[in-house]
Image (cartoon, rainbow, N blue to C red; front, side):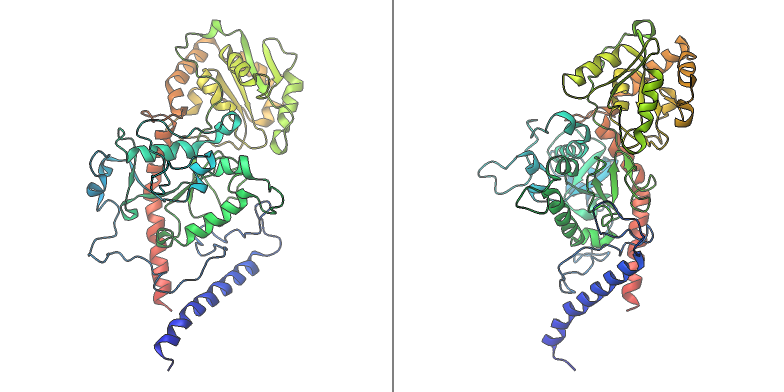
Length: 480
């Protein structure tokens, strides 16, 4: 029989052998013809429940270090969300017992979040990774089109405020992950893609890809991930191209997305994930009294006309509608005061077109909502934020793409909506526009709080998946 020291040295070797064998098996099962996300060799899991299929390079640790947390800690404390919530609140903090969702936030290095904004802790701060949000002076997010995918920034600020004496909202940050309903991953994935997706010579790997690979290694090494297989983790990847190289490895997590256009259904789905609104670029129409007779333009569209993938319909509609009376259909961009012109145009229009582009969703829908211009949605695969509680048909018109390109169909439909029906939708738009406002501090039922409430409604399903994962993982260990 080998001496104790020899047996201890064999443990990491055995673990490494199992990891390599599992990886080889996964790649063999995937097959050459399997779908893979663009520019990545990571295989798609065989089934949504296959949490072992995380093909990343991780440092093998000893069995003791990799041991999963038990249901009782060393003090006999139950491993149950909420068991220590009152103590976790602390003086001047929101009580997690009153929160819709309790959130643990990883204290990840600056390079993943506010460091991407150029922020660094002040001298003498002791190396902290979070800005002090109590005074309201927070690091600024870049302007322009960066803003439309800034969801992770607003959610992170809201969580920091919840533990800094701010008024309580639906989500409250907790200090102990065992008290949490979900684990929040503070990676500003959209900003990372927008600013660092291209390699800068002499580097051959972009900073964005480097951060994604580092993110995966970090997460799968955490006891929180091992405890649930990642099913209770929340990752925001709102830009359609963000997290491109890591998404298939992190698929058990709840993704917060703009749509599913560039995701394989085994990686993202409405059942598992959340759709969040874009941050609108148009100016909110405050104190809007411009009713039906005060909006001279019948139908409005300003934006890119020639698009890839599913956006070809824009060009077809342009050719059909460009000469129609009371219709404004024109190319536009953010240059030459494009956002300001679009705001003015939407504020003076009865209906605003939202047509599928490169992806099913676009920021234009949310610009129309806050302009109180009734959206005409022509996007067959679109998914909408908070649709489980918000009936979009009460303030939007939906048209199938196949119908929209029929000669005369769209104009007959729009002209057939009388003043009374339009006014009902306009009034409803003025009631719901607050749900699409991102702001700090967050306000009641704004976009930030609506996202947290949508996540809270998924907590029972998240908890079920985590419990099932623990059951299966414990059963596998017991059979060895």
